[in-house]
Image (cartoon, rainbow, N blue to C red; front, side):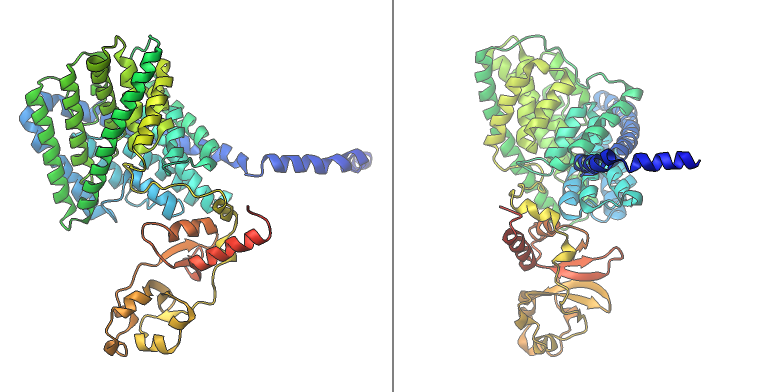
Length: 586
């Protein structure tokens, strides 16, 4: 034992090891400075869980519920309007009485959580929202499974972010897990792992990618895809023959088609956002909004079937309709009519608050327009090419996801031969549509210099010497204490130690001066006080302060939601200035 111990000590103290082991340690630290190894454990868990969840959802909705409902609708047209209306009423009741906000769900909620809640989703109504998605889509709403797929995967990622305490996930980690789960959900729904990766990365922004989530999203998407494939197979979801090639003239025609689809998509998206805003603000019970939307969606289906009897119908998830459009011959007038009714039905289904998303509806409309374009204008013998271009162009313009659009067309349809024309059409449609997006929460990415604030914790720059004003303080006492003269345009209001809101200078001025000595701050029309964790970055604080809620003050809280400090734009500007002064940013 003595010789062994001495031998080990001699080896460890050898000058060669003492010289080079620190270099090896430095190299390994450099390679794994982002803790990449932890994602090799977390991402597969998210992918596996999401894959199992989405597999169950696909079996229930696409193999059990919708085929039975569709068969009944086709055989009994009179049932379409009452059937969809009833399903939408059930959705409205579920969302109105069993969730915190009936207007928050699906892709929109994921984007909102990414930007404004540091990756934390409210998971208590998870199963309620999944059930509401089933009643929306299963009853015949013009939507498909990408909404619940993305929401379900993101919820899985957020759950792991909240419960994997061993890895001590930061705000950045939680956001990565959120996007990672969304990618896995998209991958499983469409059996298209590359689409899941690219769409999830493009989803939060209109002009950029969430680069930090690339590796975890790649791992989770592949695992989710394999999990789904082990149960349901890996055949492309909308497979069609794409044997031909394309010519130079096809490229020119593809550019024109991208222009046309981009204009149509812009009109649709702007109309959808206006309708959505109207219904969100309309002060009537949510279930009644849904009843109206269900009725109008059903009317779209009835009118179309009256004009064009057959199996093609612009309601429901329409997976079978994609095969019809790609594999059968329809007159161009019928395809264009289908596109119009499908867009109107989508607005009626999702604009009123239906629980899902519109990826597949936009995909189908683009394919219909592209096929009609090939038949009536180009007179092409290869309508599949223009269908692929139309599909990618509409998704690119509608969702601001040009890369995901092209990858999706290639993966989900098997149309790999048409990637270049599809890229051209998608790029032109993206440019024509400008900043119009079906998602109201998508943002433009921050500048490169501002991104340097990602490395500064809020707790190092927050203001700790702020006044803790109690809610029973009168406005006159507040003025006498001189807080308003100290540059505080907004102040947090406390009920003992609990922050209950904030009051702004402008709200105080709305109270007549003669009532200041009898009006307590709790009686003033206060505003919601947004919170941010002390471990968050200054970049996170900046995103909250510049969000659509236009808050001027953030409460910095610890893990127990105790207020430790406040953040204003002034603290962010000072942090940026300090970083510039030490030469750490350009």
